[in-house]
Length: 302
Image 1 (cartoon, rainbow, N blue to C red):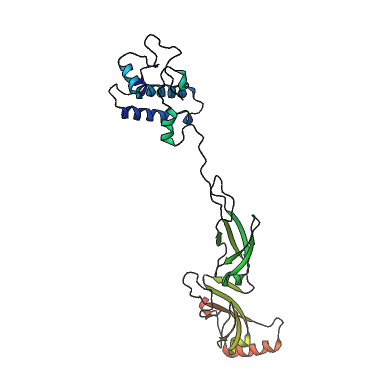
Image 2: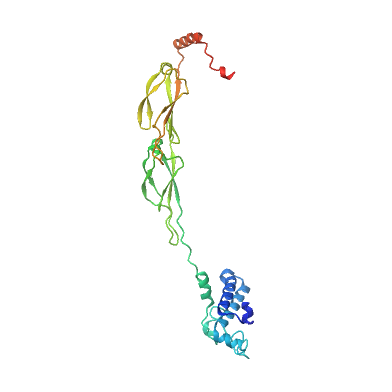
């Protein structure tokens, strides 16, 4: 065995703290747990551990410094014998050598890393989140409500649908996902909302949009018509001379903003609908009217 001071890379004048610091740094770098399968590193670790075991013992260090014992702890004149110094954990048991130093290098390493060679307990891991898709009707998405969802864990839960929920929006149900590992928490269930289209409503932000068919007579002479809203039917006035594509607004008849509680508007786009079959009487009346007006609706495109 080499000179223990040289093995630790410290001078003979080193204090106990300096010896300990040098050993810690070498043990951290050479420990077999960090260098699995490297026999040379393992031998170096044993040598470093044996050197520190001798020097940390004040009596053994004093005897070595006086030249009474060899670097392996054996008496002078018996170097290399079977009764040399073997610290526990560094190549032999505590009872195998002449000098019982009471030193275990694993204890030092354990204080540095919380476990030494002992198998480290895996960290708790949260269970996986489970994703489900829930289809809801347009009006349920706008007005909110409750819908049952069957989960893979066998439970059926009534999920609260918030007002004015959007396509693809996700609702998290804590603790309803996969089981955690090593004592970790259960994952969550993620409910992704899919919205069925409505026959005539659509939603943009907080506003509801509706295409409203009207007759030629209603467009020309004006009319009061009943139109659907998300709250039911209301009366709306179609102004005289309304062109197809004209948009009217019903204030406060839209969806509720989930952040501030205010409601959007409903926009009604007029669409003039002519008779499905040709009508000679209507044709004659329109031709007569057109001759007297000579209207050019595309002059701005010239």
